[in-house]
Length: 169
Image (cartoon, rainbow, N blue to C red; front, side, top):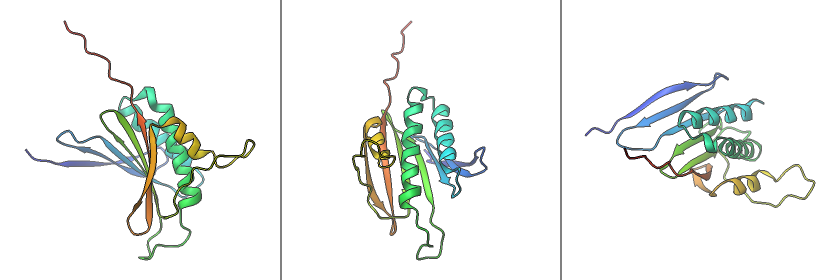
């Protein structure tokens, strides 16, 4: 059997393109979106996540998935995006990727910084340091790993509800 990757450009309402990939031979569904550098980046990340989760028929976890993606993207844009070009002269980018696993939805955000994310308990009235505690509360687990020479990938895994039992005739 032939293993093929089929990709098509996905253009959201914001006009930013992403990649939606459908892999043959039971590979999990995958979708990725390049995060814009403008002030609408969180709106775009939420819309992308909501659209993908809806398309994959994962509506029971849509709100949590959107919140997790939003928090991870906010951290990447605020703390992880470099203001200067990379060593090869290219502009740094942030990517949001979603993949469906048999029992979970994996949300991964890549940013060009090697600064490790820190789970810091927020002060009771503080407005910041709330993103990762929210991700930890909503997800089955989260973590990070270096990615490439100059970046990292921060991920969160969201448990999917069990599939309904099939009725026998």
